[in-house]
Image (tube, rainbow, N blue to C red; front, side, top):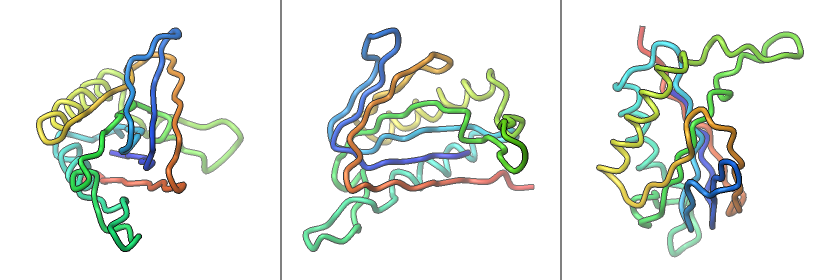
Length: 149
């Protein structure tokens, strides 16, 4: 499972001109389930995400997690993170989980995030979304939990 997280001062997602999710300070996270991912990978990625230290402490060092600063989460499904771009000029999405499985794991991730953290806003799976954000820093990290074979 993949997460591209960005520390933001604000972020929002709109579908057909209507806002479906927005946050103030926190993390905007693009999420992607890969083929073979299960709840195990989702749980591991969520634990890593909630504990990842990307917020500044009183000394200006990135030592605090979103949980520690009580920041918000905006979780946005984005299957294109799994794109295989090794050859040619058109990405292959074979590494991404099939849509039904991707939706199931995204919904599971959101449910678990809401149990462990608040507030949590989301994008809309399968919709054409417009995502806006103010990246604070800028601070952006790629987190990935691989399937154990």
